[in-house]
Amino acid sequence: MLRAAVIGTGSIVRFFLESIHQHPRVQAQAVWTRNSEHAAGLADDFQIPEILTSWEALKHHADIDVVYIASPNSLHAGQAVDLLAHGKHVLIEKPIASNAKEAAAVQQAARRYKKIAAEAVTTLYTPGFNALKEAVSRESWNLVQANFSQYSSRYDQLKAGSTPNVFSPDFSGGVLMDLQIYHLHLFHALFGPPAEISYHASLTQEGIDTSGLLTMRYPDKTISAAAAKDVDTEDFIQFQGEGVSLRVPHGVNAGLEAFMDKRGQTRSIVQGPLQERLMDGELDTFCRWIEEGNLEAADRSLSHSVEVMSSADSARAAAGIHFPADRHPRLP
Ligand SMILES: NC(=O)c1ccc[n+]([C@@H]2O[C@H](COP(=O)([O-])OP(=O)(O)OC[C@H]3O[C@@H](n4cnc5c(N)ncnc54)[C@H](OP(=O)(O)O)[C@@H]3O)[C@@H](O)[C@H]2O)c1
Image 1 (cartoon, rainbow, N blue to C red):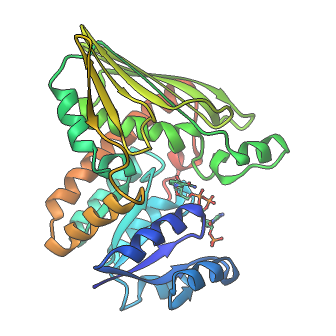
Image 2: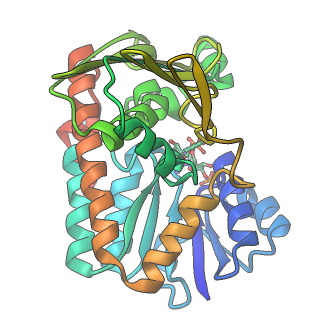
Image 3: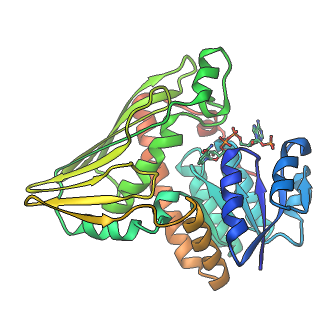
């Protein structure tokens, strides 16, 4: 049985603990938090024996095999590298790091300490992903359009004058890092790195994007992906080729249900939600890699993450978005 600790007490941690709770081969041992009062509800609800507030206690804990990192973005890479150096496997919430340089440091640490590290990107581990990838690979596509919008209550906080972490330069925030990152992961996984990338965004006074349009150019196709935290509308992905189209009606982060239309015939590629909880797939894959000692599979996933972060860096540069972590990597 693998014993896990989680870092952070935000809403995504609750989803992750629900997946752990039903998994037969992993159990939640501890929550790490800055303030034990923040973790009391989670510990009660999921019968988690320990609440830790000391970083030293977490990294030296003899009964913790794996740590799920769901802190603000700019802390991910530093926490991951330190935990890897102390013999823990790490599953890191998206985005894996602030930039490609930090992501590469996570990969180097995983190689050096021979531990499993991976980025938690639900889209790539959802059960429909392989069927979608295969269907996409059988056709030629000229144009792909996508939308992922989630009006955020934190945008209301921003308008009221505060800077929530998700819109903070210090925490490497913004909609590119929060939502476009799913598009970047999916399109890299389907088509590889683009030849060119551009990004046009609405920025806050501190230079952080609240919505924006990403364009990825390949020799044979163009992808246009919108994402927003300041408006809300229907999410979708639409692939268009000559005489063929493929629609993902609920967008990139909702199970990848998909339909293909060819010569007037519509057929289902991926049906309905194939897993009960959004994070079951990534948790199960991550546990399997640990149990099998499959460092190669995890390393391939990290190479993909580094490439994605490199595209995110290019997109940010195109829109003039800079993080303090770009000048001073937050690494131990
Ligand atoms: N929210 C979602 O639905 C969602 C979905 C998918 C992925 N994610 C990813 O999960 C990560 C966390 O997202 P979130 O929305 O939960 O972020 P958040 O609320 O800004 O922070 C997450 C946790 O980190 C701790 N924290 C907050 N501010 C901190 C600070 N200044 N220094 C150190 N720790 C701090 C808090 O836990 P304590 O107060 O207990 O220390 C907090 O619960 C992000 O990387 C995000 O991209 C989130």
